[in-house]
Image (cartoon, rainbow, N blue to C red; front, top):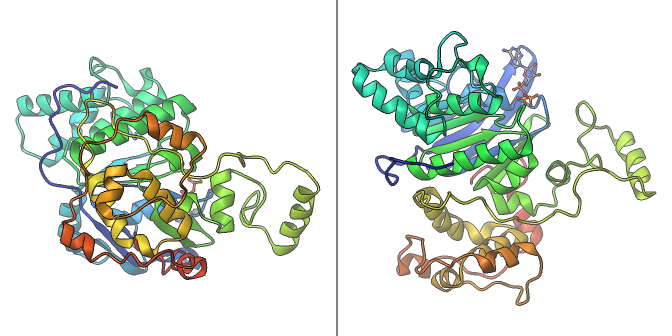
Length: 404
Ligand SMILES: Nc1ncnc2c1ncn2[C@@H]1O[C@H](COP(=O)(O)OP(=O)(O)OP(=O)(O)O)[C@@H](O)[C@H]1O
């Protein structure tokens, strides 16, 4: 998607979202409990989870459309769970939300749909509104489609129009509910590329909830997973993509072999019976040979560098020693030789095989490191070797393990 007329990422950076001990039930049914995680500013995070685990409820709780029973969700010093109606109204303006079908008004053309929040929430003149609407339509590849009604365009276009509308109030946080629903894999990749490009242009914090494994493996900086009413894990993408946690492994492989069953979770007897079947040779489905950490999607050439990705490098290097060995290795391998020197780390494997490294070799290397840590800060970073597997995986297990 070509992006014209939009400058380098400027203005404010995305907001950090700090969620602690968040619990939500409807009557006696607990949806999830004790969810603790931090969405780092300007980074892209994906929340995975089998159907019905409450991913949509989670998004709605973040914008105060649903009231959690316990816990807090802090954004710029405001707790969405407990703040006044007035504060909630103000804080909601920081969010851009892209609902599954774009949630457009069927009787309004795209121009009026995208202009709607500006007319509703600002006192801007129609001239100013026109400038903003056309800019956002251009950004989302919809220039020229202003007069179309939602019913006259494809599902992918409706989603992009929903995104254009989510962008008009300059959001600091963008929430996306199942962007791939109803889209083919190619269109899903295009919309993913658009998220990365928009993130690079406006540096907003993204949270995308999805079932889509491809998207989860290639788009975000951070991955989380909800299962059995809890946040199983949340952390840098490399942690989940190399995780041995059965539910994470099963989900990312799209396999039948594991704790997730046909409708909800399996009981022990069913799991054992199925295990025997898979061991006897029945194919568990999914993509078992696609494991490890694929290259992350990058902004389209010509689009500014992602400030969130730059900050993330320093952030993950600071917590590197707390991560499981396979994740550490993945992170170190994702750095250019210059960055490895800058952070004082070396890849463990001297000889690489596989497509990821081959791809990395053909990419132009940055001419200077992209992190922002001073030499002194790097000197103070714990580089105490490789921690033991048990020590580190425990940190990424269970609801208490939410720090990104
Ligand atoms: N307003 C509500 N009142 C009562 N129960 C609700 C309400 N909203 C959602 N639920 C219940 O919460 C659970 C989680 O729903 P949610 O839509 O968040 O799941 P999800 O993970 O987004 O699923 P999917 O991937 O299928 O969209 C479901 O059992 C649903 O019935």
